[in-house]
Length: 484
Image (cartoon, one colour):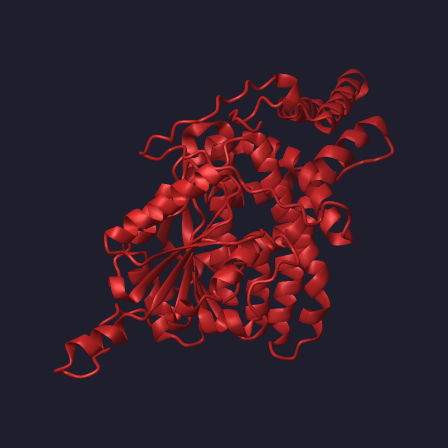
């Protein structure tokens, strides 16, 4: 199932037509004149009102980056509103963010600083409340950027035309670039995984069914599409995917632009990365549980679109893709060396996994030498993702656990703000994860048994995987932050 999905998506991306060949995307102003002698009115028609939302939560290290980038967008100042949604609980950070907004306001930018009395709904709640402001009623489109995202100045000039020229398009998603890829091995591995996600899964979905999951940031929504889909909902921890599914069921089309890149930061701390992956995996599985029947019985979209969404998008990528790597590489193969009666066919151990790995590798040619580390690390993370998937699918405790991804401002050209309080030292045993350590002991035992009594060479792989579990389990992976 995983191989078939990977092959089909790869084929779709190689055979695709560029977005500007599928849709009209001529620059704004070309053919938008309201009259030859009415230049001012022509400009108003060419450049619609755009709202930029930046949700924040105690973003001391990066708040200046996103606000500055949003205020630096090439767009008529009277046609752009930058809305900073600050849910910070740290009064010092709140004060700094408000001062930054006032600073840009004094420079002639239309910046709105908005706060709430409660964090109800987290990010979805903040975005939803932001759209209720009176001044938003004049806006046609809304661009969303997380606090660490830095769009180029021409971002709106390259994305808005798709929405203006094509009334059937509800969302334009840009590509994520990363400023701290080289910080550590863990960030390099993340870059490989996310690059494949964008270049294959997002691009494949965009070119075949005009649907993919919204990434929650670096995208532009048509506000009427957002409203028709029911607006933001906080019923899961993947409010972005939830909105995309509901908009897709209403018939709206999505476009992914690979050549529009937005700089952002990868989590370089293992604890932060675990929380992020739990939120993404658990939320997607929980959303599958909530919308599966709705997708199946809706009559507003064709059968093949529903099949793609239920089978490929949800079941294969959000369920099977997490369970299979863990069960095969970390359970079945190790147990097969202990129980001689259990045999794993060569095609299942070598051919299929190798083909899937090669499909990932051809999309990450510059990082192909990291493929062995990527395989071992992803197998370790599949342990956590499988647990998170079952929590979401069965709605167990922690299904709506929301931990904001910590941003350190790494890789930016700005120096981080000085810390008011001294960062506490991180004791190494505070980073231990006993489940991974115990699993590494199990794998070490299986590898040693195979070395002593087996007639194959599974012990080579199992030893390597055991070391990977141990390294991650004792926290010797990624960087160390104040919250580690």
